[in-house]
Image (cartoon, rainbow, N blue to C red; front, top):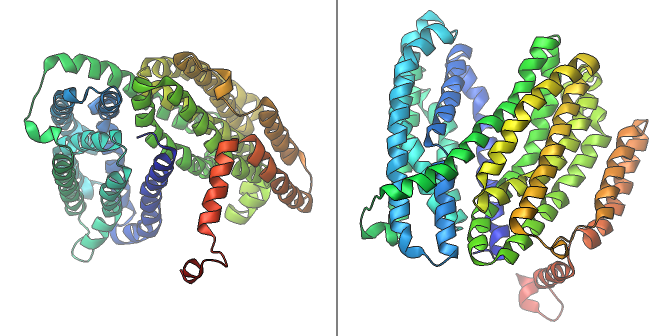
Length: 504
């Protein structure tokens, strides 16, 4: 299940599973704002965020279950799958129920004290949060069922199940608007969609995986290892988003409030670059777990392929953003944002390239069963990162915040790289990206950032693209991969001697 073609196909499917809901959101959100009104839509977004945060009550068991199943598939211990799967699913449902009770208990405080909800919407909002609390066991256990599917590398099935729910999260409320704009009714529609999705996951998993049909078996001795792996994954799941979003709160505290918009706008644009490494790592995580149990050399090879794949895709986009940052922001959001945010965009684009490489090391460490290393690294980084933002924001303004983020992800990526290599005992010969390639890319980004004049920058982008193609072909793609690309191109191109293929 670590075949390169399969992994590439699954990455494309995983990327589609993330991109389609994004398109649905872009289309539906203006209509939702118009139909619900700003106040109700604001509460709906808060409800979405709350259910996402309370989803962390699974303590990382979804990912831990993916790791446990993939590891057993790779080490021919499939007889243990029954106990591991049902124990994890039962525990996740129970944790979801605990989270539901907690959310229901704090709902009165949320809607009346913490959130600035208009008095006319308090009752609707409270009912909405109670409905979301009721759905929490379903939400949490669905993640476990998806983890079983992904552990088997059945990303086609996972995507088929994921996309309808993600799209329904936006289309469902739209379907309710012709009848009512009551927030609790809209949330009830969303809850029904989640229940249907959970049933679909359960039915398909039981039909697809024979070990789930034997019997329901729950063993206490399995809980400890699952919680140890999942617990450290949860640490990263909590701390990493804090480091992603904490900077904007510090900007609001240290700089004029308009600076938040000047920073967040390029930041959110750059974060879209990470959709590809995120999709790829979702596929490689179970592949790392399975191959590590069976063949560690194959794990090292997948590590190398993952690094080269993200660099191959992300570097050209980063180069364009760094070189044409001012022009892009000017066309997109206006001259004022271009003046205030172009340097910010340049630093963030460099950081996104570095961070995409860090994704691979992160996935390796979690895949080989060392999420404790990533969790400890995040805990060490958090206070240092906050201190760096505080100092650099006061001394350099917005560019200082972007520099702090980029330096943090550089240190994070370097540490992950070293720990991943040590965990795998990687032979240097298995890493095919020469140092000169990394240095060339760094120099190309530096030159792009320093060029004066729009015409010079546009000309540089075209010249860099002409140089990048051969550099990527010989520096990022191995000889065997080049042969595979040539074979694929020959098969895909019609020939004069094959009329049937021409007709096709």
